[in-house]
Amino acid sequence: MKTNSIEQILQELKIVPVDYAAAKKQAKVLDDLLGYECDPIEDVLFEANHETLFSSPRQFWYGLDLQTLQTPYSEIVEMVQHLKPQPEELWLDLGAGYGRMGIVLASLCSQIKFVGYEYVQKRVDEGNRIFKKWNFFFARMKQADLAAPDFELEPADLYFLYDFGSKDDVYKIIKKLQDLALKKPIRVVARGRGVRNWILMDFPWLYDINPPEHFANWTVFRS
Ligand SMILES: C[S@@+](CC[C@H](N)C(=O)[O-])C[C@H]1O[C@@H](n2cnc3c(N)ncnc32)[C@H](O)[C@@H]1O
Image (cartoon, rainbow, N blue to C red; front, side, top):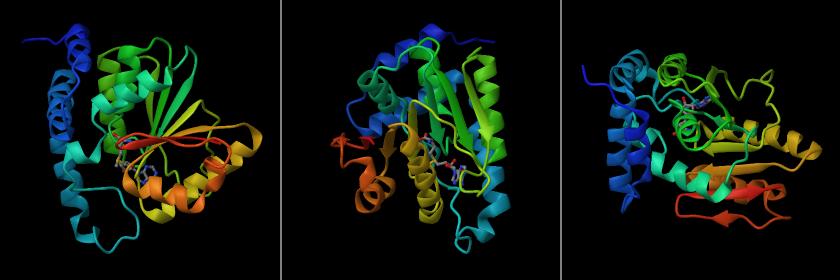
């Protein structure tokens, strides 16, 4: 059986896709190189949840195309190149899917700690399986409901949010971020129209001191 190497992953991560369609195509190539087996997992999740997809007030994106559910690796590479994480930093993905940000950090940066919080246990398990397979010791997925009243968000160097859940859930987690920002300035990378617009509409404390930096699909906010 052919085994893929970290050099192949790094080689692919160096390629800059020409547009979003190419970025999604490249992400599929990387998913395969890494050995993710997300399709059968998503099929099971859709089968178990399709009857309540439209009636539930919560949003876990069952049935969404995998390359739309997740941020292309190439965009995360751009974020890393822009933000230049330093060793020992802790980056959190709030609503992490299968943990792509952990893959990019572990491949490109040494000793950056990554925790991906994700509600859906099967996505958590698959993410951790891949981290273990590649010996990405600094990356970990954890199951959690970010919107639960007893979920305590930990202080981190960067928080990443990609339209992760229902508007109600997103607002709850941004309010938790606000509590943390009262103690120490925070950095948030927001991806997707929903979360970026909601921050700009209702959370001025995230941009009234430092102007936001807008990129095509994501924005860096600093409190
Ligand atoms: C759009 S995906 C983004 C995945 C990843 N951040 C990325 O950009 O590749 C959002 C993820 O957030 C998860 N999610 C939604 N609501 C959540 C909650 N309340 N707590 C934890 N995870 C949640 C969903 O299950 C989904 O996997």
